[in-house]
Length: 605
Image (cartoon, rainbow, N blue to C red; front, side, top):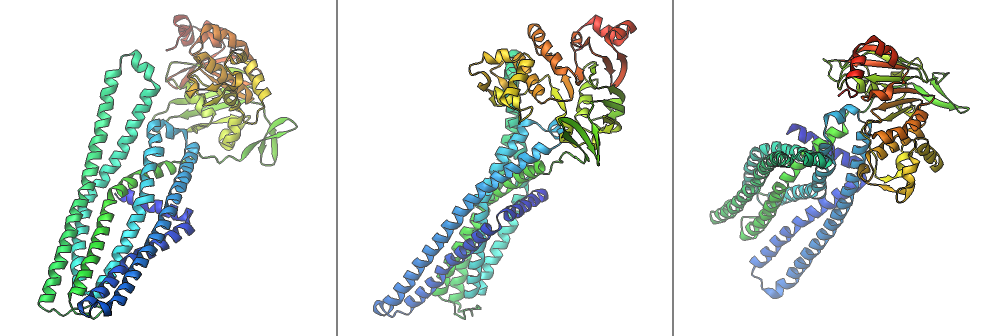
């Protein structure tokens, strides 16, 4: 609960920091409105006092009408300020959530790759939807209601003290008992609301996973098992939600009964004080009478109603506190550290590294020096790797799944930093190079192609946002993608559906290669780039691939060994170590691990 409370306090501070003037104005209007709404009780007391005098309607009519008009004006003033405050609150709520989503998305874009390795997509999406929605409820309704009720209770308690210390003490004791009960019952509720938000994230993640893999589910007849797994997650959500809401909702009936007892106690003690002529102690110096007891009951009713309103918002507050904690967890996620002091500059159509005041011409030489790395600090995935790739060379990495090939590629991109050793680019440690500049020079074609909603042209231009239409078309032609694009309904303006569902796997891969081509990288990384393409399409794209790799430093990961026979050097990796290196002919002659892989099975899987 402590973390949740801290998250709410932080949320309120952020809210006030964004809208200090508007929130101050809302608080002023709400405060005045709350104070004003308690004033009719004071005038009602005066009205009862006039009636007690038995002076007759003719003498009292003008005074009574005056009091009634004042009360009407008070309610008009209260409703006007209340309307203004609620309208402004609604506008601020939506604007705050808008900015908060922007901050979350910006934080997500800057987060380390490791964050996405540890968290499921559906769970992250749940933060943007369910957790954000809990804040909408608390900011637009619960928080204003809470503040309004607190001011009303405080104002009416002052009025109580004005009329009678003794009766005010009865109310105070009753409220103290109520606070103890609410605190005890509500403590468990917060924990269950936190579990509820976590279970919502897990459920949405499972749904997203099954939707994206629906064909696999059907092919392997996994529907029944998938439903059982869903039912288990849904039951967990049900249990946490039931527990949370039972604990939260039971508070209001308890509070309702406690305040009813307070109301009864005020009526009882008021009658006893009048009957036994107890000396009243108050700021008003009025004796106990019906003209005090009845307005006091009205004030008590207002206090009771607002206390119930406060209690009624507790479940929303606890739900929002759990949601706020998950939101701030995303916002506080560690960003990629980019402390590089070497930048990329272009002079006279040539690219240079700017190292201090010196300019080093880019060549594209990449070197691994005794590099070790592990995703777990206690376990290295690669060990003492040494690789040297000259500009224009094609370096192939082969090995069984899990041997460390993709990890090497991740280190070149600086998705992760090395544990020991160093990686240099033209003799400069990549940790000194600004990440954005480093990645501008590296083109990656992955096995799993991801295309975005938009036109074919937009997806090719994703490689370089300032590329012209002509440059994008030229890139597509060079990798043999133009032919199939021209056959699409609207050509380059054809809208690609969700992740390219209206394209074949080979077509998606060709677009991915074209996207990489238009970025004009100095270093190319092909991670199983042709494994999803059929043999005929592979032959079609081979010339384009050769053109793409021409005059670039190229790293290739391949399970299909026939695609890397022309590599300048082939590195055979086993259990994170390079066990063989050389060209295809040399490795075949050595009759080592590569020879066994090549002659035994073309597929390393």
